[in-house]
Length: 216
Image (cartoon, rainbow, N blue to C red):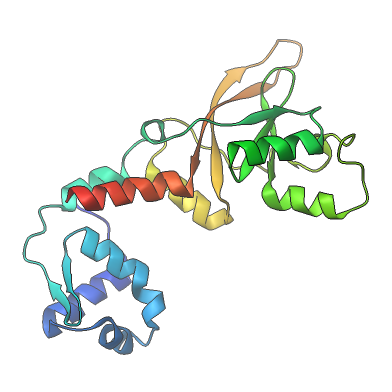
């Protein structure tokens, strides 16, 4: 098993092989990029033990890449192993009560469910902030008025991987994803139900990488 490196990461490895020790500034100069643009690539390569970093010296190529298979397993880890509990509110809940729930739970977004407990919307801190600036009565206004509705909600399932979830979070510039289990609704409705069984956030994913880095 091998980790799939990007073209730029492979180029960085070659530069370090030919010039180690070499600083990030010198690597960036050879690639005509800023040091900030290389930060994530260098982090990945050092966590994978492909490169070694020494303060005030620079980067070295590591001859021991035995951790690559562990890194590949990390990318393939399932959402069900890292998800946290989701916080949901009913569609008829007021904007005021939703704000109270969000701050009591100290989270960035809430998932909205209908009478069948199926996911129908999501509301973020930004959504709630915008509505409080307006002139509406937030104690009477239902949260369903301001939520982002299905099918415009990005979801993941238990068997999806950390890498798949991370790509979605980056692509859509969101803080969290609902983890859902799809069930068949009533024969009358003929609709599928999206039962919320958890959530995966930027923090969930970052914690996995930090734990991995400490382990190796």
